[in-house]
Amino acid sequence: MRSERPTCCCCLHVKVGPFMLAVLFMVGGFVSIVMSSLLLSNAVQPESFFPDDMAEDDVYQYWHTHKRSTLWFGLGNGVFITLISSLSIYGLVKNRPGFLLPLFIVQVFNFLCTIVYIGSLMFYWPNVKINILECRHMPQEWKDWFLSIDDRWLAVIVFSILFVVLFIKSYLISMVYRCYKDITTQALRLQRDPEISFVADPGNGPIYKPPKYEDIQKVPLVSDVEAVDYKPPPYSA
Image (cartoon, rainbow, N blue to C red; front, side, top):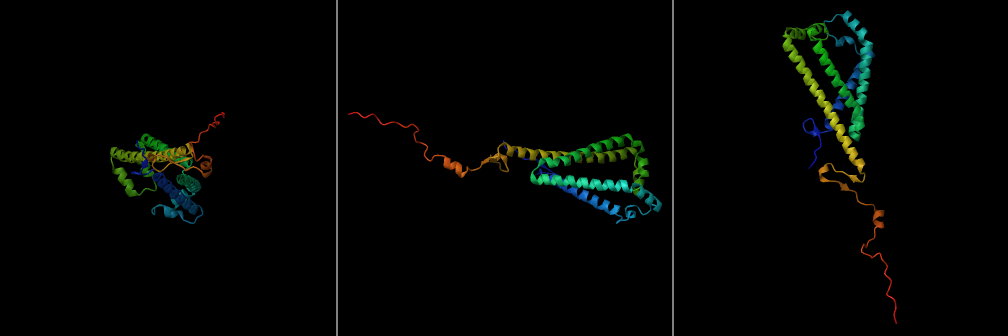
């Protein structure tokens, strides 16, 4: 039976999905590094990131309270994500499955954090509207819309979105794992017999390398020569 290569993202190659995910992570990490560096160096004013109706004293207090902790964390997170995505791209290009493990571990950790967040939201659900009122960055129109919805419909909307996000994250984990498994399988096949080079489709069978010229010279050209040396018959007068 002909074995098919695994695919991802609507019948694309198994490496395409992890490559796009790694590139997306790299862009996000690079943006985090640039923005955190600009804010730490005071090249960008923090007032541009807050609503216009927010008081100046509140902006000053919030900025100077969370400046060091938030921005340094954002800078370190950007460097970490950029490094992981760079290792993943290198592993995909060079067919090194070990460089995909950091990206896989980060995806699993993100999935577990989402499960913990859903559990905590279910536990503290009676206070969700109070938390919405205390959110500073949400526009007032959104707050009024969320507060006007019935609690049951609000729970359906919020948890439906969270479970869709959970499904997408689980698919990304599966995509990275299948790519890691495929690269590992191909590497093991080549290590099992280095004299055999496999074509892209394993169903066509292996292609053997031609023998060396020195090995051909050692093989006799005539194979039907008798190895036994017969003596001539005895002479009789």
